[in-house]
Length: 178
Image (cartoon, rainbow, N blue to C red; front, side):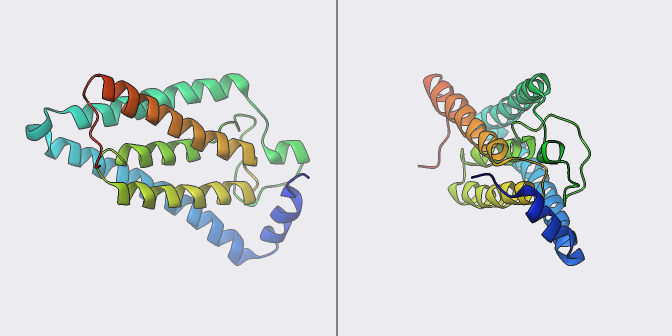
């Protein structure tokens, strides 16, 4: 069974309040996540005397390199978006052609969540819940397929486990709160 992108998008577009709400939520979650990431980097700077800069280094290097690699990967794939495939105007304002898979918004928020997991399980959970909400918004808004947002989240979690857990653990650089 296919997800009813056109029907959902039309229902949302027929309700101006709903269009405004999902647009605002999409932007708010994105900006809040950027703010939280910058705050986390500020924390990393603050604790340099205690950890020699390891947290800050990991928290810049892993997300930075991963974001670049995922951006290049999705540009090479250039998978179409739902509104391209089904020929409708999405509820979220977007006119990009291709570059749908994986969702970089969802990838980024889950990568930031896993970055927070180095020191705060509570913040990681809060950001992950925001990530789930963002994934839903991006799908019902018509700008991503379900596979795009799932792939974004899974890639972020896998990269984090490998980089923060396995590689960081092997080199003694991991700092988990448990």
